[in-house]
Every structure is written in C-alpha cells, then in structure tokens.
Length: 388
Image 1 (cartoon, helix red, strand yellow):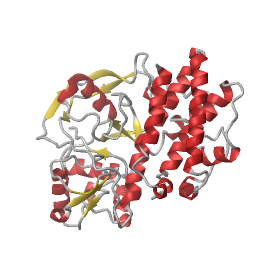
Image 2: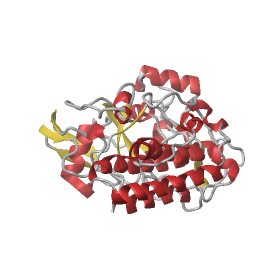
Image 3: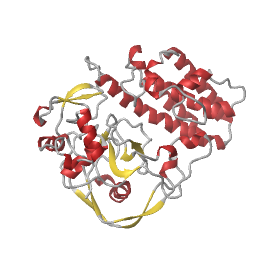
Image 4: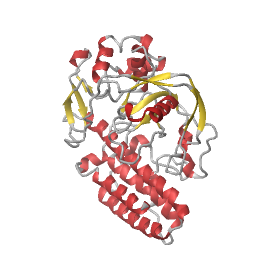
C-alpha cells in the first residue's frame, strides 16, 4: 500500500508540469521561490540520498554535482547551490531529470517490495515531503507568472472558487487542554509530542475574512495607519510600498482594486471570496483594526476539534496565520542525523499557519499540522481567521 501511494504521489508531481512550457521549468521569480524543475529534482534527490543510497544494494548514486545542485538545506549531506540562484540551473535538462525520476522509482519498487518495515518511516516522510513540494511548486509558479507582462495562465480550472458566508463566532471553554499529534498515523516531528496548554475562554470566527472585509480595511486607511502595525511590518510596508494583498491588481484606492492574479490568470476580484496572499504583518494589522486578534495555534486546534465542520474552510481553502511563533513543543527532540534538520532548525523567526489550502494534496492535511513561514512572506496561499 505504501509503495502504491508513493508512486501515485510521484506521478502527480510530473502531472503538475504538463500545462507548462520548457521555458517555464526554470522560472524563479524571487529568492524564496524555486523553479518547477528544481522541485522535481530535489524530491528525487531526497529518495536517492536518504533511502536508496544507504539501503538498496547495487544502487548507483546520482552525480555528486546533482547532489550539490538539488540539496536544499541539509548541512550534514554537504554543500549546496545557493538558493537565490536555482533559476540558473538550466542543466540537467528536464529530460534528464525525468529519466532520473524513473530510475529512482524503479529503485523504490525494488527496495520497498522486499524491505523491512523499519525503512517505511523514511519512505513515508519522503512521500509527504514530495506532497509539500507539489504545493510549493504551484505557489512558486504563481509568483513567477505574476511578474510577467503577459500574465500567463497555468490552468483555467486551477483557481480557488470558494465564497465566504456571513461570519459568526463559536465559543470555546478555557482550561487545561491537550494539543499535538496522537495515535499511529503519519505526522511530522514538529507536531508532537502531545502536551497540555492552558487556554482562557475564547471565540473563533466561523468564516475566513473576505475580500470585501479587507477592502473595508484598505478604505479606512489600513495601510496608512502605523498604530495598527507591528514596527517591523510597518517598516516593510513603507519600504516595499504594500497597498493591498500580493496579487490584487488596481490602484491604492480600495474601490479600484478590481482584479486578482491567479493560477487561472487575471480574474475579477470577488468580494465574497476569502482574502489571500497576506503576510503575517498584514493579517495582524487587519485583526487589530477589526477589534479582534489572530488565534494562537492551540486555540485553532482546540476549536476545530470541538466544533468540527461548524468552522467553515478549516481545510482545503487557505492556510491560516496564527499569533504563535514557530517554536518546539515541550519535550520535542529532532531525529538523529540529517533527517533531523527537516523541521527543528527552523524554529526561530517564523510564525505558524494552521489548516491547509486548495493546493494541498489530498490526504496531506491534519488538524495538528504546523506550517510555518517568516512573517513578511505573502506569496503563499495564506488567509485570515479571527479570534477574540
């Protein structure tokens, strides 16, 4: 079952590039993004390096120069090509990368058909790692396409279509609560261990914040009022001239933001759609303007556990910023070796997002999932849910 699922995930990665032209495959719009070809190669390098080279007899490792090019951040594995320059990697060609993927898939079939169960955790980690990169590939591509005068379309049916209803509030009792992953299903190391937290009584909004809500914030001078912003965020807003969410198209007047750039191309801005592509600083400023706040991640998890589907769009719509810095849970210890660099070493200068988005692969989301990004990041599919 694991092998079948893994190979299905691997095939989906390659299907994601089918609408693209060869020129698109090395597109890198900014330092934080990576080209589609790099995502395909990096996920293949992961299996080559951490599963096949140590455990499959007779396996021939990839060219060491490829390991240098497609290592992301694993210091224990060796040096790597600078992240801001991944768009320069025109070679190996996509033909060579796809041939490498086929060779690695054959190796995975050989290994997992006969291997002991102790290799399954690494294979399963690689599966979920590749799903993470599927989502990132599309978000990075949106950034790259958005910077082009021709505004390319990835696919006509690739955009989010959900609309927000009138918001209400759900009450959650305070007290000593448990959060974090429990049970035997897959989870990333940063989702545990399960532990107790004290929460005061709170309310969580049933709906995500809409474009109409955010237009009202802009109309009321939200981007011109420093008292609403964290100091670092206000400095970024001024320096980068933020006036609206990342992909809105128009001018500085709220009523004149008429369009939004999406994977389906430029689209009319739907007032009832959830606002998206906001930094943590913008989400936090909006929450303060609203007379509310962002939830801490424990509140988000407890509320979703208690209220279930009464909290609309908890998953499969937008990742939702929380007020929680990305820090280890009590008792957290990373795995030994290079795999231990997967999450633990990023537990500073980031904020947690909860839920999942419409680009998240099926089966990849969990209520305990802790996504994380720097607070200035806004190319990701991020939205806002309020608490009070």
